[in-house]
Image (cartoon, rainbow, N blue to C red; front, side, top):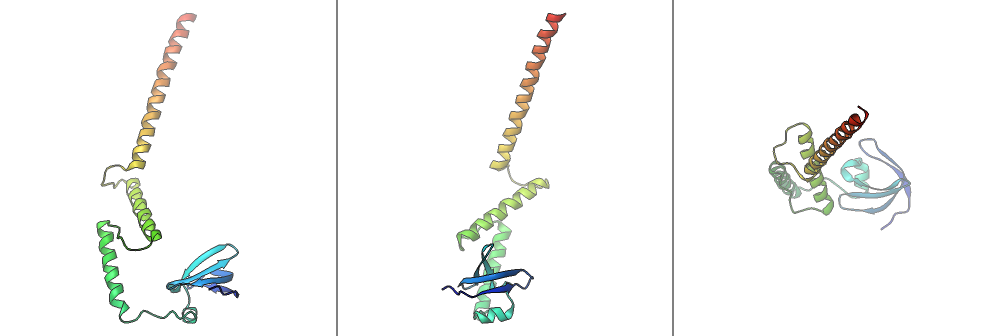
Length: 153
């Protein structure tokens, strides 16, 4: 479903989508096409009158306990570091990226609790190579200097 009327949309945080065309409406938001690209704006980001325009109301009474159960499960998964199997590929990818960024931040702050990961091992190998290369270069330079020094003595 494509609605061809271009209009401006303003989120509750103040971000404005100028001359946006609604390409389609999804259960959790609307997809907008602007000059700068395609964006999805979630209903929670839109003012109440825009939400009502697209027939998105507050959660029903039966949905509230389900949402609370999901929130409890997500908080338990975050505490244990488990990535749940539910959700879209984008959600899973975002969770893995967030976990990696948290691990790297911990490494930078010196709070690493696990063994080094592949990226850190790669950097350590590279540093070791550079140290060996510089040491070898220094040895060769010393030998050449000694040879040249003997010849001119």
